[in-house]
Amino acid sequence: MSDRLIIFDTTLRDGEQSPGASMTRDEKLRIAKQLERLKVDVIEAGFAASSNGDFDAVRSIAQHVKDSVVCSLARANDRDIARAAEALEPARAKRIHTFIATSALHMEKKLRLTPDQVYEQARLAVRFARKFTDDVEFSPEDGSRSDPEFLCRVLEAVIDEGARTINIPDTVGYAVPELFADMILELRRRVPNSDKAIWSVHCHNDLGMAVANSLAAVKRAGARQIECTVNGLGERAGNTSLEEVVMALKTRRDYFDLTLGIDTTQIVPSSKLVSGITGFPVQPNKAVVGANAFAHASGIHQDGVLKARDTYEIMRAEDVGWTTNRIVLGKLSGRNAFKQRLQELGIEMESDQAVNAAFMRFKELADRKAEILDEDIQALVSDQAMQMATHDCYRLLSLEQSSKTGGRPHGQVVMTVDGREVSSEAEGNGPVDAVFKAIESEIGSGAELLLYSVNAITTGTESQGEVTVRLSRGGRIVNGVGADPDIIVASAKAYIGALNKLQDKHERLNPQA
Picture: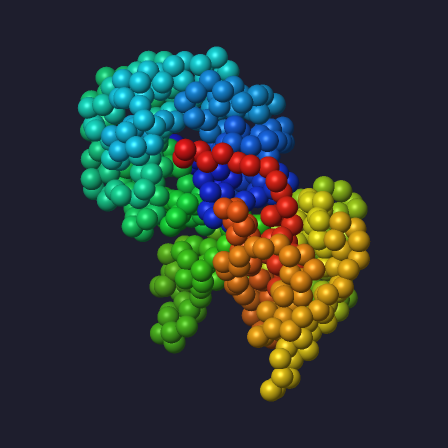
């Protein structure tokens, strides 16, 4: 009988640490419900002690998710652990994940603690966490660069205190597959009570080897939990990609011989939802979930696939949630057809009022676009949810923009500021620049524009444009996302969305601190 591998998703915690990927409580809950449909084993809902917003998000997820274990990160101190326990209290199944750095570099430069102090703090943290739950996970941060002897000493102690999962992070993506697997294997051999815990890996992608490192640890070293994120989202170059490890394990079952609880048909819906909420587009050549993952341009490839799919496809598009058959939705489609499509896409609306509002937005879009595709619906619902979830200071009402050859583009914007209608206008170097300057002439945010990105949601000239705007002010970085068939309108929506996020005043602790 083959072994069971645990999929631990940290999109809502480590994934959110991507600059600009901050999510609201309601957005996190939407993703958590989708992860539950995906049937991930553990959802790391956040870092409850980092802010009141994170606490509320973890608690809300703990209240609503029933089929997955809900987890909160906590530093190895009583305050963080107690806060995590409080947030997780409503959960049907809960886990506290506590961590402390164990590498000489981190202990000396960051923590300013001796190895003995770190050892004692780790041991006592697990002991304290066990007062709230039997399911305690411990991570030695920067484990891949830690002294093996000291690491063994710490891990033996935390297992003795009741840690059921030992997670070895490659925090900075320094590891290579063979050496990382050897390290895990050596730890399991040297720690006397290693058999009393499930061994886990958490790899970062700085050298592009997060998936390879994770799979090597599973195959060669007996790790039975992989920590990963949807679309490989995460700090710097990101984390281990959930969709890649899952489909590698499924496609190469002959090699790995491991079972998974994942419903792979929910992979693409999960990918699209996370991308839409965070504003991080999926690159077309991304494995499994990229737009080109199952596309064939070469004539030879096309001929082969038409004769037998497995000539150039090692997995079926349908198995990961792509579809070639669909009901074509347009302006003549009724509410029931729209509602059915929402269900097929795994989109849950909170009320009939929300469905009706989404349907009205759908009809408005259908008047401007002949065919409404799945991606259009995802963007439409994400935009609506963003508007409903926040009490926006700023809201776009209308805009006018004019450009002509030899002249400077001109933009006029009508919006509400704290419920008060205002109008402003400006010229710019281009139509988008003119609109942004018109907005700024009224608001005067002082924010720095770090990124302006345009992505066609579907193909063709009728496609909705999805714009991502990344702003920075006072050390805070936020993303705004807007979608509309008019790219200038989408740009204004994205810019105003980012400005609204900058108005959120609550501070958030960095779990790496």
